[in-house]
Image (tube, rainbow, N blue to C red; front, side, top):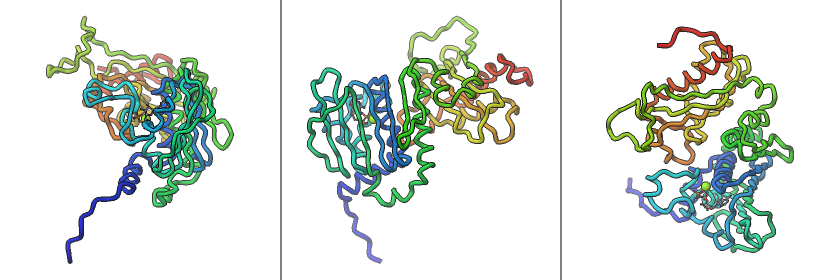
Length: 366
Ligand code: ADP
Ligand code: MG
């Protein structure tokens, strides 16, 4: 057999392969667009999808907007307003995005329109990208803020399109993502609409319980108790120098978990899937089996078999102990001190449930 020729892929092929790694399904597009809206300081984010997102996605916000002369940059590869260099990244990014690739990659595999008007601009403008072909920016009437529309997702990547599931499944994924961000940002009014019907809309009044009420309904909201946990440092150190571990493993000065807050449900208010266990690390919405398992363990066997409670839990850890510079599609995080994080979350949830008499005390802790 002859050795095959090695040839460089053309730009379009590279673009689509790369896009496939970030954009897996409509929910991944929704995630990127919501993150952009939140990064833009929006106080309202309205998400609307057709046919689970396969028939169209629109995210509208009232954030800072994109000036007309920046629209081309916004949809360009590796173009971002959020970091300037690697030092910025090392200092830690306060925004959800920073790679400058979401709009570019979405535009590679769909028909994308970004329409925007910064609050101080007299008029709005829009730009369209079709399968990677960037059109010229043009004036467009629009309210203050930004609206991004994504149509015909994967129209030019049939293999990817084939992997899409039924409309209801795709919508479930969209719903999980929008819910995740709505609960993480009770100060932002987040709404979701599917095929013209409102799924939920939060008030944006800053109150987590009211966001839970909007998203999950009254029965669930009333069954939730507050979690509020900080480590018992047992000393005088209050860790105010802000520096990370310098090699001296002083757990008292720099606890593995600084705070656990949120809401968890009564052990009888449950569902048959784990998807209502929403976890956040340093305000990022994450999937972390360690956090879910610790939460379930706290119920100490008082959940019916195959039933899972509702939880919205915010875990604060020193920023050096968790890698946020993860691949955009991977929500799973890893902790340097997983055992300590698990223990803290379990204790936090257990304390909350015990305080409200929702579980019986099992073995004394030691
Ligand atoms: P990133 O979020 O990593 O910077 P994106 O491709 O998602 O990359 O967005 C590129 C740039 O476009 C952002 O850095 C931001 O300046 C601008 N942008 C995108 N969406 C919005 C929005 N909803 N409001 C204001 N600016 C936006
Ligand atoms: Mg982004």
